[in-house]
Length: 284
Image (tube, rainbow, N blue to C red; front, side):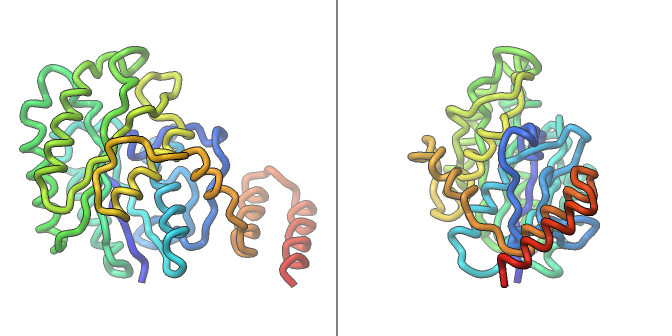
């Protein structure tokens, strides 16, 4: 059965990394939920806006496959760019949508983790003061609605480039939000904090860029896999990412890739046939 993870939060969970900044991840063991069904992952996974891009779950899922020799992982995208903690209240649309999507996924998968990244929209005007209580209600109600056991909750910190330039210059209380997130993760059962220290931004000053999203995903997986807080960057993150990208693709994955190229008009039909023939010959 597919091992699935639920993605909640705002744009840095959805992903705004530029798609041409990093190599594409294509892995037939990584699935994403679309229209209540599973299909092979293709970034952007969380298409909440036309500007959606690379998020953290691509490398999270790729590392899951490196660690697990068999089985598949499923990504349930429910993040919403710009959303506040209040918009995730249990009586709101975002929460209800996440419950519905999770229930669809749980018909054919086992929900094994909740990934949360949110707080940029609440990092000003003292909104951090009651953030802990609001997050606690969201998580506990979600567990109740989905009849979940004590599955891991992975919570990412806000990056330290906030509060300085561009759209991120208003996030002046991101450090206070991070303090709340750390406190929450340390006080809740099976809940783990992941640092965003050292991650870099898109030119807009608020969104984590694609290269750093790959690193962030590895940190999230480390917290999930080892059941521990990740309070510092992992050792040799660039090397770990390169190892993920050096993985040899299967015949199905290479066929999927050239099929996408043809469907998007990047190659001609004749080119597609030539590449497909070479792929089949290589695997004979």
